[in-house]
Image (cartoon, rainbow over all chains, first blue to last red; front, side, top):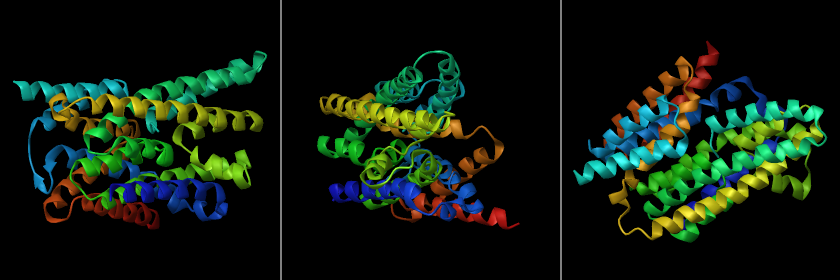
Length: 99
Length: 244
């Protein structure tokens, strides 16, 4: 099942890349398309941050991941590199579990 | 791969090298140097993808297949993030495709620069990414644009896949990923991808609203569906805002 999802999602992502190179320019040059598409990653990434921090399955929970996110936000505000942001978040969660 | 921060760095380094290269003998050397710099940074980022994907329960071949076949960072993180959180693989696949939609706009910008046909276009499509677009459009000369696109694409592809493999292998050696806080890594990764896009008030407001809506609907719908709700709402907002 995971394989099917991996392959279908990969094919979709490839099709989108190819579409940009192949479709008539006018299709994608529409003002609304141009302004709306960049908003989608912003909303989806924010939704992923929220749901992956505060839920287990379909249940809302508050655990060490919230503290890890807070530390990650500080790291991001300080403009830390990507790996540092991820590492300090993981380390925070790991440390709080040990305590 | 890396959406914002890296494309801004690459665009910046691209311009600077473009300027110095006008004076020096071979502009291609500067382009290769920039491409390698971007690729090495992305390779480090791919290590965390390999680790998160493995911790989410994907096998080594599945993890590596994603980096070869999908080859677009945010989408890969979204797919394994949804699976790791217990959502259905199809919800993850839809989120991955939605996040990949911006690559179509990059392709649009690149189409006239690259002028690729046939098999070359099929190969070029896989390299249509934030970084390759930033590197290609930073050049004044079309030949340099094309060289920058291919050099960055090939370097990224190499380091991205090596990094993924390394991260996946390292995490396979760990018996309990949760002990290392790896379950807290995906939200931090998404945040780091999001941050460079939030420099103005409107995107920040959209991000906060999206997170609140997703959390609010989460208990009432199947896993992964909150992402789709958010995608529909933001699309409506984007389209209707123009209608005013």
